[in-house]
Image (tube, rainbow, N blue to C red; front, top):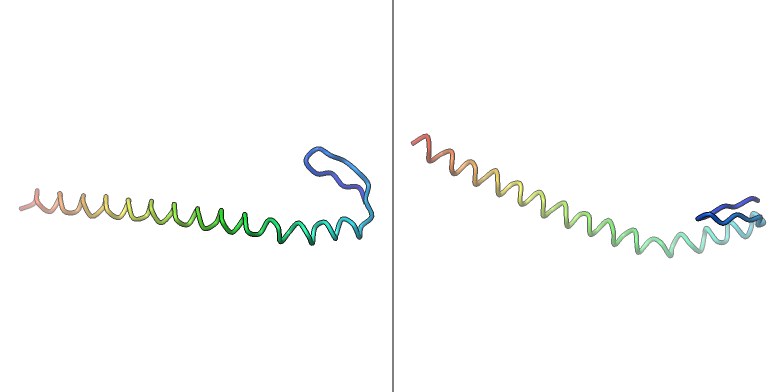
Length: 66
């Protein structure tokens, strides 16, 4: 089977390619999970900051109407 990865090209048996994929997949899972968790924390911070800005704007506008 012809394989190319990050600019390297080669010919490997299908069994070897499947073995490398089976071994490599679980090794990358923790990095992917950490990235997803970091993105969720960042999104939560942005949501909270936006919610605070909306609340502050609502408080300021309620004072102007009185």
